[in-house]
Length: 134
Figure 1: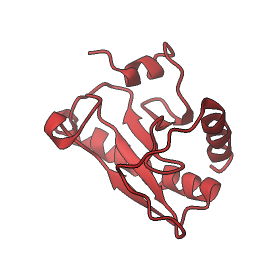
Figure 2: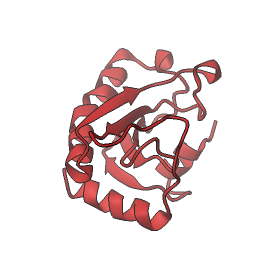
Figure 3: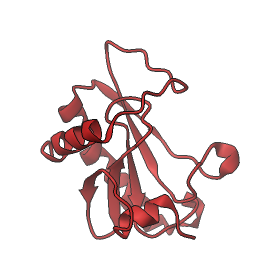
Figure 4: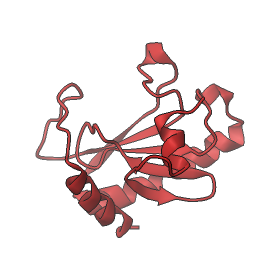
């Protein structure tokens, strides 16, 4: 099933790509919980992590530290949370496996329910800062 993520991967829809290799892509979340909130996804459109071969799961999660470090460096965040939802009842909105990297800041108490939607210009500036931090 085609999703917004497969359309971004295939270049049919714009995305704020911060990392890409042969099998994965990381993009900025358009509706971030906090500045730098990003999604790491496999290019193969598995719906749930339980559908993935364990080597693919390991490869996906092995990218998280490198991507998180670039996000922390670019944003000045001091910590981060990781989330990964499987199924509608688990609040998975897009049926394509993705790992959330959510930066956390010492001077903010961010609420998951209060999201500020950044402009495309803000996202592009942040995308470039993160890409330059690898």
